[in-house]
Every structure is written in structure tokens, then in C-alpha cells.
Amino acid sequence: MSSTLLQFDNVSVKYGDFTAVSDVTMSFFEGSIIGLIGTNGAGKTSLMNAAMGLTPISSGKVSIAGEDITKVPVEKKLDYGMCLVPQGGHCFNRMSVQDNLLVGGISSKAKHGRDAKSMRSDNLEKVYDLFPILKEKANVPAGSLSGGQRQMVAIGRALMSSPKIILFDELSLGLAPVVVKDIYATIKKINETERTTIILIEQDTNRVLSMTDYAYIMLKGKVALEGDSDSLDPEEVKKAYFGI
Amino acid sequence: MYIVQVLVNGILLGGIYAGIGLGMSLILGIVKLTNLAHGEYIIMGAFLSSILTTALGIDPLLTLFVSVPTMFFFGYALQRVLINHGMKRGAEPALLVTFGISIILKDGMLMLFTPDARHVATSYSNSVVTVAGIDISLLNIILLIVCAVFIFVLKRFLEKTDIGRAIRATADDTEAAQLSGINVAHTFAIAMGIATAASAVAGTCVSMKWTFYPTSGGEYLLIAFVVVVISGLGDICGTLLAGVMFGLMQVIGGASYGRLISYIFLIVILVFNPRELMGRFLRDRRERSLSKKEVKADE
Image (cartoon, rainbow over all chains, first blue to last red; front, side):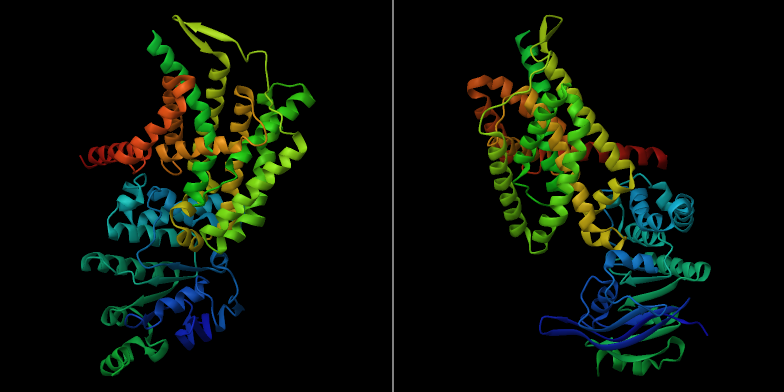
């Protein structure tokens, strides 16, 4: 049994009077792939943004490997091995593909000092091995790439910091099914080769359940259902997802 | 021959205008802040140059080795201590903070240096080089080289270093930069430091070229705005080209109509090409060359 890497304890997120996430407790095990499923407005993105420090947490605690990181600012989260690939990738459109990837490795350079240079070039090679198209387009501005290629840049940028856990927020949004299939296959590969813990935030229940070890289904800011992905009853999933 | 003479004078003058606009362009492009104290930073640079030249008896250009780092730390501290806090509350409070800084600096310089006009003269201030019948001011050549070298070094710095990449990434997408582990407050402060260091270079050029006094910052703020509008935000090479265009308009109009023609030119640009003439031209050219490379690679 793997140990808990990321833990949410009674986390709540509020925007003024509106409660987006209410008293959520979740555990994410080391080396596993976990799904976080829900409709629009279920609170998935709010929860992950709060965990990363992009949105303030109203109450509760977030810890990684037992260390409380609730108050750690977003730019320091990478030092704890935690990384978010946001909705739409958010590439630096005016910068080249290679510069985008190198930006992802800046924080690890600061952390690892002298070894950083070789570590960064190793990571860059790994990213290019995973996504050979990015090597071909290394000097092209990221803004001129297709949606799928921009997602590859965003994933590559996250991998450059050698994270322990990566949160993917709606990777499939606006992408062709064939591209989504390839990207998910690559994520599976990252999990298997690097033992990186993966959290997939998605609306596509079938896809997530088919490739994750464990899944949480959120509804109106709360966990409506959770369990091992292969043992969840489809009827119960449907009820939890739609709240019927 | 007269036309060539005008062109040469305009191009040389444009180098200094590019230097004046550079800091403003960087701050607008990266921090997304209209820095109303930009003119005062330039005048501070001019006073620093004047004081050091008098005290040390050296060429004013050598004072850059002191004034550039001094102004960098001054700009860094101002951004970190004052402006970043204003920016947390929105664009308007930050704008007002820079307005306040502008007033404090202007009055501070008035108290310290009196309202008297100053100028830094050198042995080559009035020297003229004649090439193929065209008279070229040696001072203008030197100042153009200084500004062009600074712009080139800054461009390489932004392209090739991690700090430069962090600055460009923050300018592109602040949230994604934070998610990549970049401390945005620190990066903004470094950008402001670089912009004020650029103002030190511009200030030294201003002190050698024209007379200046504590209240003349507004004049240079206006020039900087014009250069930025022509060049496009944060486009460093565009700044140099915009400076040259502005310089040409000034020389074509002469002492009487130079300013008038420059501002009419600005209005023409705003009317016919509000999408930052130079920046767009350079970006298009860059993209064309990249797509050509891609086609070749595909073949």
C-alpha cells in the first residue's frame, strides 16, 4: 500500500458569500492516478486552485507528505513537488517552445544549485522524447501551435520541475478525441516510468474511470461519491454526478 | 545632399529617443503599469551623471558604471516596497503611486539642485565629422552607439538568461508564471530595476545632448509615450526603430515644427494603424521567417 502524498482535510473555499467547496477531505496516494470528476460548477477547479494557492482557502488544511502547505504561496508549491497544468494549458504564447519548457525548470535550478544545469538538460531531453514534435518546433512561438501541441508544451513545462504530483485540470477541453487519447496515453506513461502521482480533473466520467486507480465524484462543492475506479457502480456514479 | 543630411541627423537623434522610451516600454509591456515617474527617473539619471562627472572629473559615459547599478537598485526597491503594494489594489492605485513618486522626486531634486538648468559638456560635444560631404555630430554618433549597445545587451539578456525568460513569461501570463515557480513580485521589481537602469542611460544621454532641470521630466515622459505607442509594448527592437522615426520627424520639422510634425505623425499612426505599427511589423516578419523555416524543414 502506497503512502498518502497529498491530503486535504476539511477544505472549504468561498467567494464572498458563495461556498464553492465545502468541507472536503481527500487523500491522494503516492504513484497513483486519481480522478476528480464532476459537472461544471461542482468545485473541482476551485479545490485544485485552492490547493495550489491560486485561491485562498477559507478553512481546512492541505498537506503534502505530512507537511502543512496550506499557507505556502503558489510559486513555492513547486519546491514541494506539486504542480498544476491549468485549463487550456496557459502557454507563454510569445515565447518559443524551448523557452516555455526552460521556464518550467527555473525553480528546480534555484533548488538544486550546481547539479541543476545537467538536471534541466536531462529533463528537457525526457520531454522531447515524450513529445518529439516539440523538439521539431523548439524555436517556434508557442502561440502558433495547435491546441494539442500547446497542451504538450504545458505538460512538458510541468515535467521540467521533476514534480512528485501533477494536477491536470480538464486536459481534454477543446481538443480532438484522437489528440486527447494520445495525451492520456502519455500521462499514463509518465505515471508508470516516473512514478509521478497524477490527479485528473475531468467531466468525462468514462475516460477517467477507465484510466485511474481511485476516483472522487464532486457535486455542488462536496464529495458525492468516492472509491476504487474499477469497483464503482455506474448507476451510483450517474446519480452522484448529476445529483439525481 | 540636404535630404541625406536630414536623414542622418534624424537617425542619430532617434537613438536617444529610443533610449528615452525604452524603460517606459519595458514597464508597460511587462508590469502592465503606466509609470508616470519615468521622466523623473531620466532626470535623476542626468543629475547623477552631472554630479559624478564634476566630482570625479571623468567622461560622463563612464559614470554609467555607477549610475546604472544605482538606478537599478533604486527602481527595484521602489517597486518592491511601494508599487507592488499599489498594484495589489488595482491599476489605478498603482498609477497614483507612480504619480506620487514623480512629485516627490521632482520636488526633492528642486530642493537639492535648485531650478537652474544644467548641461554636461565634453571635449567632443561640438565636434563634427564630415563624411562624403555630410556633417555628422560626433556626440550624436556616440549617443546612438551607447543606446543601441544597451538595447542589444538588454535584448540578449531577456532572450538568453533565466531572469530574462522569467520576465518574458510573467509579461505573457502572470498566473502561468506563478504556477511555474516564478516569484512575480520579485520579477516585477527586477523589470522596474532594468527600466530605471535604462533611464540612467537615457539620462546621461539627455545631460550630454540638451540642458535639463528638475522639472523637465514631463517633457521626456511625453517623448517616451510617443515612442512606446509607435513601437508597441515591450518590443525592444521596435523601440529603436520608433525612436529613429520620431527623430526623423523632429529633424524634418526643424526647430519650429519638429514637435508639431512628430505629434501629427503619432496621430496618423493611431488613426491608420493603432495596433502598434512597429511591433506588428517585426512580429509579422519574425513569424514569416519562422514559417519559411518550417516549410523548409517539412520539405
